[in-house]
Structures are given as structure tokens and as C-alpha cells.
Length: 262
Image (tube, rainbow, N blue to C red; front, side):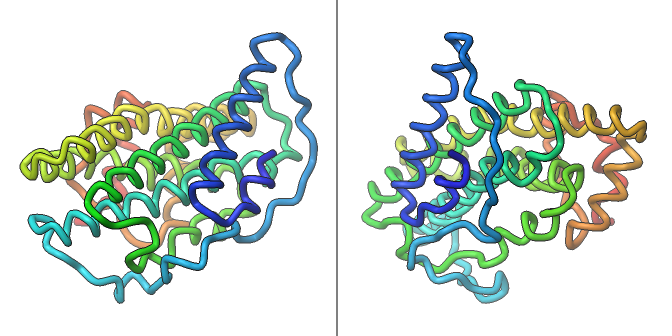
């Protein structure tokens, strides 16, 4: 199921398939007939549509957020992030299937993948409401780099993807909500508020299973987190941090402040 999502190129089709497979998983869980955890080989890179053009981050055009074109660019970038998140959350399932995990692990990541698919749809709808669409603008080529870097390191994947990259979303989303509120764009505000509310749980899933694996391996979670982020994340973490939401997700300040840019 995970590899089928990863192998689907069209964004809307990928998101719809993600939601269907999640519904199948949870329907089985509710009846007590859980779907077996099998084995499958995920692709090194997920299938992608022919557009958007993927550029080096330094080459992605910057636009003023106060303008209509700037708001389109923000939504396009978020849609790109959400589509990558769909793949990241499905990828972790087959990528590390040789490590025995409780069924709750699969519950969490299937739920996260389902919600990311919903987020992609909401943001695409908001983008289309502004007369644009996903693929109309170039996008960041490095979004899958964290997955590539941590393809053989389960703890590294949990540290970098949910506990760094998704936690960053908690820091920056309130300002984006304010931008679209000032523009009186109700559809975009609704999409961003849903993302903001649900991303806390995704960060929390990362923290929970990171601590679980550290406990299994008799590792100090804070020391391990610092080591892994320094190894796999390119650059320092950028304050200001949303300390309230990070704490709600199980990330205390002594995890991320020592990694912050001075």
C-alpha cells in the first residue's frame, strides 16, 4: 500500500490513494482484523508529476507575501511540502519494515499520511481559488534530501523529518495565517489552521517513536537527537521557536536550542 502511493506521480491521485489506503487500514483495525505488515521495496525517490520544475533552493524566485503573486507562491510552496510529507510518511513504513514495531507505530504514520494528503488537497483548493494550481511555479528541489540522507538510519529519519522539519512548520505557520487573514482569504486561512492544528501530532509521533527506539537501544534521547541532527541536517536550526507547540508535541527546549543558529 505504501509503495503504491510512493509510485503514483500525479499529486491529486497520490493524495486520494493515500486517503483510501488509510481508510482501509483503519477500517481493518476497528474490526480487529489488522492488515499484515508485509515487505516491499520503496523507490529511492517517489514518483512526481512533470510539473513543477524543481530548482536549487537559491534559484527559487522570492516574492513579497503581501502581494497576490506572493500569496500564490506561499501556497504553492506549502502544497509542495505537503505532497512530500505524504511520501515521507508512507516511506517510513516499508523503508524500516525489518525493524519490528508495535501496531501503534503504523497507526500513527498512516494517520499522518492521511492528514498530509488532506492538507495537500486543502492547499491546492486555496491555490486554485486564487487562479493558480500546483505545478504553476517552480519548487524546492531539496525536499526529498532528508529522506535520502536517512534512508538507512531509522532514528535519523525520526529525528530529522518530524522532529526538525515538521517542527519548523509549527514555528512559521502562525505568521502565514496572519498574512492570509490580512488578505481576507478565508479558504487559505482555513487550510492553514487545519495544518497548524494537526501538525502538532505529527511532530509528537516522531518524538514518541524516537524515544521508544532510544529506550530499546539504551540511548540518551537528547544526546542521540543532537548527534543525529548534526549528522543529517544541513545547517543550524532557526529561531524564533514556537516553544508552546513544540512542548505540546514532546520537544523540550533543551533538545533544539543547543542546535540553534547563534
